[in-house]
Structure formats: structure tokens, C-alpha cells
Image (tube, rainbow, N blue to C red; front, side, top):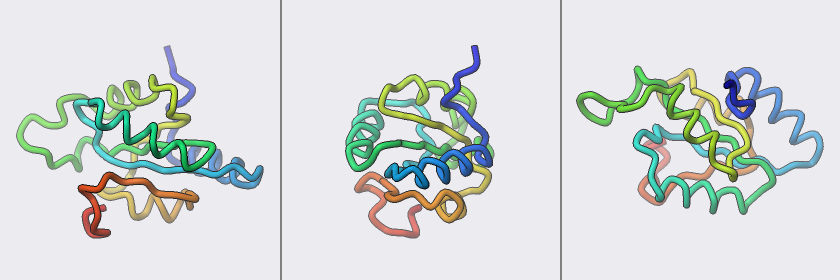
Length: 123
């Protein structure tokens, strides 16, 4: 069954633009989110409190550098797991190794990362 929350990045760009034109505040989270855990879920829940719509983008499998045999789950499966969360409105798989170009494309009102990514260079 296809999940309507999972969209291509180009489609997500259009969706975000439309939502912002309606006055909605858009929050963007980005990461690998392999082996989804409660820390990820709490991060999404807190991020969602800063706006109306939470969009999550995922690092493509070929750019994941978490060690051998990673990611454990494909991008499609990671997207499906994240889309199952009630606090997440849209999920897309990123085209680039980092979120920088995606942030420029989406122009979210807020970009939310965990404290372990306090330096911009960490993405």
C-alpha cells in the first residue's frame, strides 16, 4: 500500500511552497534515521511543536557512512517507518549527500537537528 506521506523531493518542494503560501510554518528534519529509535521519535515530536507541518528528508543509501552493512534498511523502508509516525507529515529521500541543497530548495521556516549536530559542517 502506497503511503501518501512519502513523496519525491520535487513534489515535496511544490507541497512546501503551497503550504507556506497558505501561512503554514514548515519544519524540516534531515538524517539517515536507520534503526529508527525513540530518540529520533522524540526529536520529530519536539520539532513539530515549532510549526504546523513537519517534513523529513532522508540520506540516500549510497551516501550513508555509518559503517559496514549500513544502512540496515533501504531508503524506502526508512521512509515507510518515518511516515508511520503521526507527527510526521511528509517524507522524501534526498538527492544529495547532505541536506544543504535540500534546505535551499525547500526553504523551511525551521531546520531542526539534534544537539550532536551543533556545527553547520556536520549538516
